Amino acid sequence: MISFLRGTVAHVGLSTAVIDLNGAGMSVNATPQTLSGLRTGEEGKLFTSLIVREDSLTLFGFATDDEREVFDVLLSVSGVGPRLALAVLAVHEPEAIRVAAHAEDSKAFTKVPGIGPKVAGRIVLELAGKLVPHGTAGTAAPATAAEASWKPQVVAAMTSLGWSEKDATASIDKALADEPEVSFRGNVAEILRTTLRWLGQDGARAGNRVGSRG
Image (tube, rainbow, N blue to C red; front, side):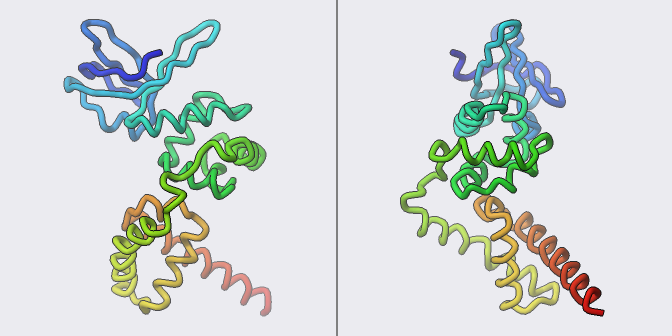
């Protein structure tokens, strides 16, 4: 079992990287996010998972041990191979995947190219109890603290765009109820975009309702 690779980055491609280990080049498949953290000619380290097939040995690399753990658990789902598991990690952060699995949010998995409602439902069903958000037993205080760090910034941005503080707060809560993984990442710009997108969709729905009455 190859747990990790550390060596000079010899090449970074669109979906793979080559790590030079004392003259031997090891090709590793990885997500765009992981590959973006590697620089040719500099030292790089990747946690790895080796997939053994009858006709091949393929290495998959990850920036963190948590990513590798989620990848390995995803492989336990029937019909999910390494390429699809890697695609899930390309779309969602490990913690967001844990949250979606724990909350039985199959919609989150349909955002991954190649995963339809049927496969998403199977993922949620088979991951039950296998992936749990970190610190679930006592997440209330940390979650509240994390929210306290980004929410005032998002509210301030929205009030500067013309919304009242009350409407901004309510809109943020409703938007993140549809995409809970966004709140766990705590990225202010991403949360703002998600809320504005939700407001646009809600406005369109309201317009449709008015049109239907007319």
